[in-house]
Length: 80
Image 1 (cartoon, rainbow, N blue to C red):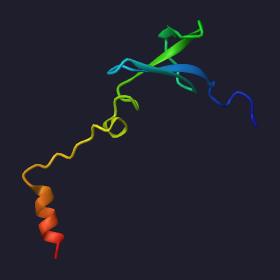
Image 2 (spheres, one colour):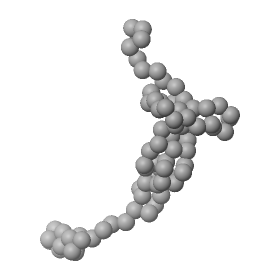
Image 3 (cartoon, rainbow, N blue to C red):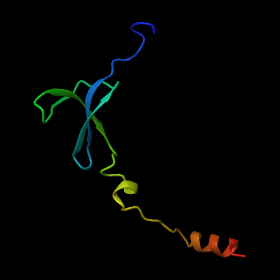
Image 4 (cartoon, rainbow, N blue to C red):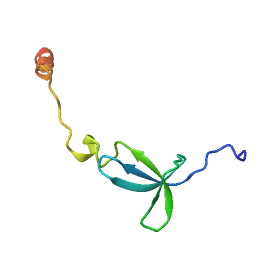
């Protein structure tokens, strides 16, 4: 492999800003913000809007929005 062509892969903390859920993982992303983690070390902080703690699919709060009876119309049309 060629030297110095791959990005730096290091530990970073991702924080879901909607639920204040954080997790430590490894990534090539960088940030000027840092956070002190549970182990006492400081890691770069990456803020995200959606994680497994706030996404409707993973939380079980997903719902189907039926606008103007489109689901019923579809079922009637293709029920034959």
